[in-house]
Length: 322
Image (cartoon, rainbow, N blue to C red):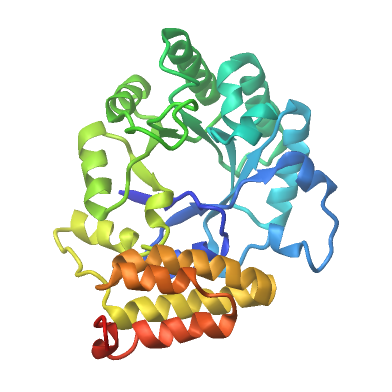
């Protein structure tokens, strides 16, 4: 059973998740033109940073022009990424409006040219994978285009495809269609399909595997604020469910992520990132509303640490009114 992560905008979080049982990840999405224009400077080096702990890790690539994908993919390989992952699923307006990401699900010929050019450019030992949504919309034509791209990608050498059960039009709203994921897995047979969408708990991961028959699952938003989801899913699959992380464990992980953010992004970036993650982590706390409001109000790193010291220390400090 494979449990992987598609990051939610913060590559540093990958390192945290790896320590908590993550088996495989892809990087934050990289725009092909951005990579090709990127200079080797200290302030931009983190965009191509791969640590020893991260392997195996895929470099996630998104763009508009087929000709740019091969050279950009080679840059990721040179940086140390083990897999090249093409994003045909991003539903964000700026991506779709720029003819990137999920937009390619509307044009199979261009999408498959991208696959061919990328596969031809990178060494044969580097796996090529895709990330797709189930189509632009719910129309039959959209479904037909999806399967044309899926079949064509495997025929051109793709090693695996991650399929999200929402359409591009849905963005992040509405349910993920697991019936569609089941149809996809039945269609491809022994080829590798990872499922994605509506995976917020370890039980969700196991339910998707059981219901759809996919070969693994890819967790995105469900892992933000809950890096323990990976080891919990693995334990649950083995019949050994883990208890929820206690206050001390939550604090340990928050402090680890804080230090990593500080190393990579400096104080200003760290405050914004860790304010957001503190809010996300609050849902695991016995007093989620108080913790969420406290992190949201932080304006300095000292204030952030004060929240950590108050809410994540002795049990009596977690009781409202004390």
